[in-house]
Length: 314
Image (tube, rainbow, N blue to C red; front, top):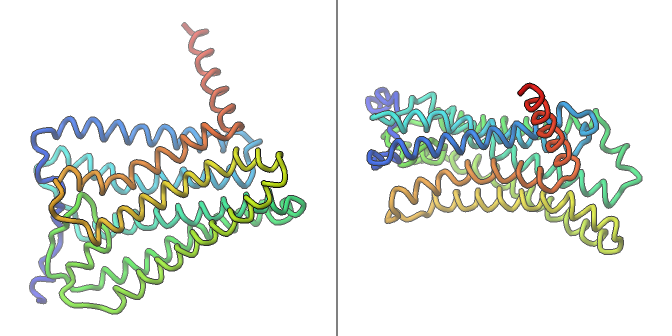
């Protein structure tokens, strides 16, 4: 066993074994999707940073959500694009752990930031008189710090637990690394492999329950006021939609990894693996940009300004 452990310096990614006939087409489509992800997220980020009128808690949290979208996808797309043009699909031991850490922490940060956004809407609509005292700039900075700190800290513990395992294999049946698949290569069972993931799942299920609790109060409050209901429809609907997209994507991916059938075609398996890194990073900024009036107006003004400048130069 010790000899097997010593020689495992790289992992083989088996998800791209049957793509030789349409490698270039898949590369172009993937590159296009990655460019769209950068475009829509970066548009929201730059808009919020540049426009001081958008330096409010809701938009600050949204900006961080978009930053997290770029962070998570950066752990997957560059390596995946490289693999599409390569004849060998391998990843180093350290690279595999790093990729798994980044992907897991990004998904967890999504839930943390969405929980923060739910709390912000709850205070703004249900307790408007104390909103400015509860959501000061200092407190917002603290909230954002912990929204990033807890996912990074918890996933770092999980990654360290994975890193100390003795492995008896190097075959990853997917297009990217995640801790669960690395743990399955362990030579022996470990209590930490069960306890730490169980705690992480419980912790973030608590986030979802908290969001559900805030929405129960939001709906009750908004039903009695047309003004509050309009505010709910404008600011809470995109948030609720984003939460559903992230939660369903994560649940779908988690259930498939653990209980998925090996009878699915490789292309279907690859899409199932990619959907959590494709749908939320595009849908979230597009949904907010379309629904939030301030964001939409700032983006349209920015585009119109660029168009006017180009016309004058021509």
